[in-house]
Image 1 (cartoon, one colour):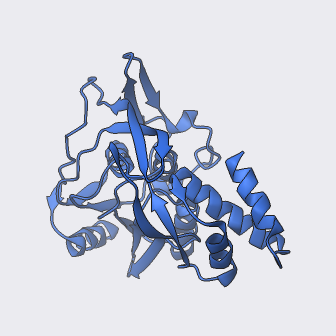
Image 2 (cartoon, rainbow, N blue to C red):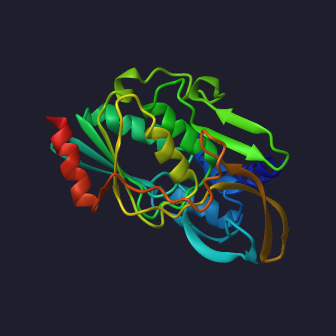
Length: 274
């Protein structure tokens, strides 16, 4: 209802007649609706109309945990969170957030366009985002029956998410050629939440993955926002992420296979391309 109401306001904005522009505005609104942002509609319309992929709007962002003050921030509204760098046969994908609904599709286009022999995914500084986005990213590179995520709720019920059971149209596609592509992932101490779920899942690939960098943050809980009063938001932990033996992963960082920097990750990817 909220998204529909704001979209209606966007449609009624003066000089807004282009259908594709309306779709872009709707995508932008959906993006920060998922991120629990408070953004002025006038800034959104102006940003999308500008055609600048790096256009931003000033929004209030709810913190991802606890009961804290909402912090103001300037966030990108249009596509543009994906950055790529081709180095020989290696394609480097910079994923700064899992809050971007276009991330997976844009990555797929880049991979199919450049046709690399190996891929490096830079997740340094990526503190997570939407669980579903991580699930879709996993569907590109992983085997369909390998569990993506295992959680336990407060009642003790355990749920296992598998790509083959996902309702996402991306996960219903066949990416067999990518599931065998050499993959290197670069992480640091700020890599957290959905990012860590993605890394753990890709470690289950039949052809493996090499994780390079430093130990991650170690967040292993899933939270939902239940209340918002002014500039304060309340988040409640609803599930904990667990391993195959039922042990909680909260507070357990991912330890890389190889300590190093992004250059080391790219070097390993080059060696895997041969």
